[in-house]
Amino acid sequence: MKLAKSISSTVCLALAAAMAIAVASCRSPHGNLDDHPVRRRQAFRAAVAENPSLIRSHLDDSDEEIRRYALYCLVKADGTAALPQLRKALADSDLLVELTAVEALAGLAPQSAEARALLTEALPTLRTAAARETAVKASWPFHRDIKLLRNDASWDHEVTVVQKIDLPLKGWRFMTDPQQDAHTKNVFGTDFDDSGWRTMDIGYWEFQGVDDYNGIAWYRIRFTLPDKIDHNAVEIHFDGVDESAWVWLNGIYLGCHDLGEMGVDMPFAMDGTQEARWGGENVLTVRILDTGRAGGITKPVHIEILK
Image (tube, rainbow, N blue to C red; front, side, top):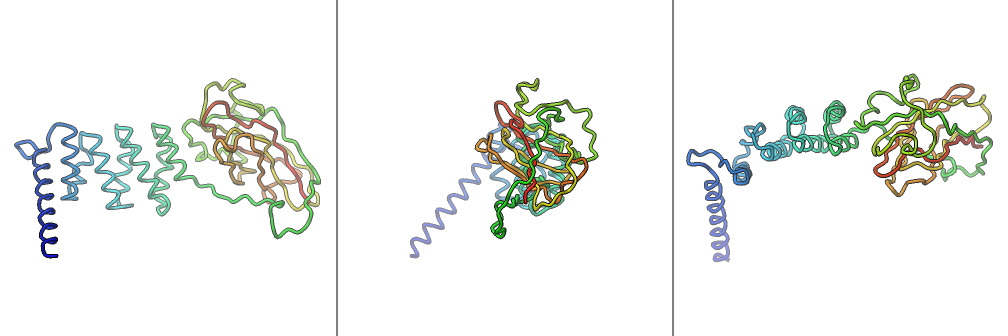
């Protein structure tokens, strides 16, 4: 046992000595980090492991990889206290440093309202699709479970469709959203002015003049419901979209259909019982995500009034 402890101590001392030699060999005769990029990065990592106080002094290093690692270490050590440094890193000249800052904020977002707010604020200025997608997912403010009368186990009555209202196939308002930030501008609101949007029919947008576009796009349509009738539920039914959808009725979020490519052209429904406006105008807003090939609200949409 004593021999094992002796060997273990010897090994640890040898490793420590080897690390010290490695760090020293990566320094110039004047004690600074070597100018060779790879050796500088290796030396910085070793130095930070030995002395974490070096992290802050390298957040503005000329080497983007060192800036990234310093930022990572700072967030790991300080958590939300590093938000000022993350804000600064979002404007870094290097796109990977920006992405590192966004990913760090996304990690903090579940427990930090400030981190979520900073992601939302930064969204319009983010320069890569990867950064924008990460920021949107982490700061997305809309959440709601879809509960349909037909699927309610406590409802022990037969469900029948007492009226079906087909929504128009033509004349939807349409806008692409390459920055993925339109949801922060109340585009789903009933009083939002969509007169500047182009018109779009049900079907793929690529076949209607929006060529080679993959990403987020928005649809809006106004329709009138009849005077209120006896009912138990109002549902909005989509026969198919390509490929994911987020839905609002009269400014209220109803839920999402987000199964990736598995959800393409799959029928789905949302409950709008409380949000429906009887005997007046209603506004339906749909956010579509298409990640490849053709996209859009590809099949008809209708309202079902259930009893």
